[in-house]
Image (cartoon, rainbow over all chains, first blue to last red; front, top):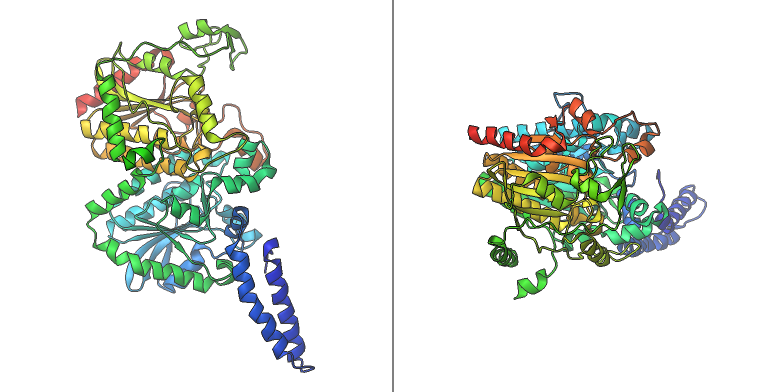
Length: 325
Length: 289
């Protein structure tokens, strides 16, 4: 375990004790099967208890967990060998913070695009911690247009702290790149399914998030600004991140209630970082469940419904009374 | 959207014949303003007369929303729609004060219900739809109301074949409405796409400052992107970038000229000639349609 979160400590401690007992038992000194069974039986209820009562800022930490599966890992589990990665925006360079390519899911050709974080310091530096430059978004758009040309549904994976704030990113039009994706995705004539798998960080996340169906993993987050950023601006104090995390209502349950996402995907007990394969299967199941019905919709209806899905979002004073009256 | 149509028809009726041009008195208590360019202290009433251009160095200072309308619209041509659309408090958001209180204070301060105003207009004799953002209202931040008003403006443009001109000025998405604010980026950008598909021109005027979620949505998507001199236009603000990369930013970084040089703008236009230039562009584009 590369990273221990404080609220996970009780679980990790029991796991460690089981491991120790097993080592003793395996060495053949004493038979500890009963003790091990007893401890093991405690783990699942404990996990359930801990993970069903997480505070928003704790969920944010899970969403950012370095061991959480990344886009390429999901692709490996979902497509196996049937995936060919594509590179570059054909304009400037290849951005390693966004990956994409063509693949096959259960016999159907698809385009997959997603943010890519690293799994350790070195790979995270290479992936820029999953924070794309404009060329990343332009690569994503190039791939999505290709998908449209070859009539392939698009699957996007969203997991980024946000679009990168840097000199080169501004010089090359970070704003324009994001804006263009939002506009173009709204009218791409093939189905788009979006999966928020970890951190849905603001505009940099939304730039891959305009789809017909938007799903969120249980312990992922999706927010207009990070809790830290919000605390710094509105509270004038970055240490108020916990308060900001609660105020922003960025948990999957909040987003489902607000009508922003279509469904919450259950994570393996203890979080996706504890069981990559099961997490990937959950996504695959979801794709197989919804894709056929999306493919059956005519392209005109598809983009009209997609437009309306986002068109509807907004809350206004006096709305309740007006709607009821 | 049933309630909204009702609201729309109500406001349309009350306003159709009442052409708005009487500018409400400036609600600013400051008698003086300091020029951010040269530091000169200028009487506010002199600034109003001088289009909020510094009398000494011609610096383009921020312009209140009604002055902006007066700058661009032909006399008595602006007819506002969706005027009364007002924000709810979807998250029950409280930071140092509750969000509804912030809204009420902003309404009192600005005489507007939110940070954007939209309406029918004539510019140099050409019928169009005009949207103007209001920086004095919570930093021009985009929440549900701003998103809805601008989306409706763009949709009217598409269905009524009227070119759309939007003057942007904003600190970005409105944090107090959380994810709903983020989604306004998608909503407004999709509406621009709708306008594109209808082959109706969209002129985006980026003024100081246009940043974050507004810069990263409709404001960057004009068929024509025009900026005012000195305007700060960026995705991430200079302070955030300095903190991230820990180095000093070059002179003029993220100012209008920088964006023009990097290919993000069609032109930079002085405020005194802005109306003429917009009219000229609309005329040429209309001719081509």
